Image 1: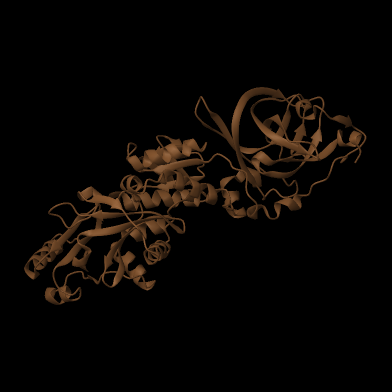
Image 2: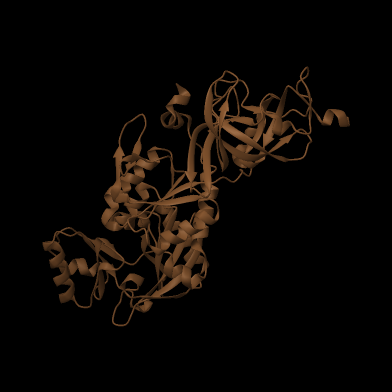
Length: 471
């Protein structure tokens, strides 16, 4: 191609918008338009007044409306635009880079509008055509691209985009929540607290919705469930609704429910050959002494099935004390388990924080004076941990067994090797972050970035979420 052709465009050309992940797009040149226009659907504003953003979907392939890419960008302006058919509309204006042929990348302004019934997904206005000569008699003077570039889209490095993230929690001032929000905003994402108790669900089959404070919630890219044990049933239902809407949930509703049911969790860990202290369960045993013998006698630990943060966890140092506690639990009709007491652990355990398929941090939790419980909420003390390879493998295996994307795995170090005592689906970040000196909020957000952008939206689900596009 000679120098003249390099700077000449035909009336239609192939372009790429790499900033927002569009590898190939068929565009039409239009010297009558001042600003370029890009096809977009499901246009959603978000962000703050000082940093407005917009997220949207685009079908880059004209003949395939089921294939969609989801993008986000900063809003530079809002303008009233009159189209060639005389219809005026207010459009969001974004700035993005464009590549045409062998020319250098250049930044241009683009307005967003729904062009689903138009042949061209993009119109190139005068600002984008600056520096080029236009030959209205020719087309495809520049190098042609192909929609085949999208075939390996999931294998390519996807352009980073802002995510809309919600933390399901009833504690807006919680340290862990604040650290996650701080990290999200640092990486140009929008993250907000949604009070789980104030959510209510519209169970329509064709378009499931979550309502909040009298309004339908917008689509969230990701949900981080931080649900207390007392709210497990309703919290899991809310998470399940977001799953039905196609939102990526760091921990699924099924995994949360399984991890909170101590008996079911133990049975699942056993199934996956994960070492644990000897454990027994019964509803209303007449032979208390035999039940106690199943966990190698006293001393032993008794746990309510719905206990958390060390509450509902008791140490029985004699058979008489154990029998008394068991009788009290039975009178209350409170399900419980008995567990072997590992005296060699010295009142301490190892907490491993697992995110994805990796142990990202750990800490030793030691019981406070006069207590056997190492939970920090019960007065335990945190210190730095050196985690062995075996402990890491067991932690990852336990997290996977329960189907969790993020978990705090509690391990006892015994003469027989590490044993898992509990897997927490909503682990706190304060203590473990302090001793490990890691910004765990950053690691959580990085995990979301890697998983959300590559999450495929099935065609049938997309039809439910965006019925207007498939009608």
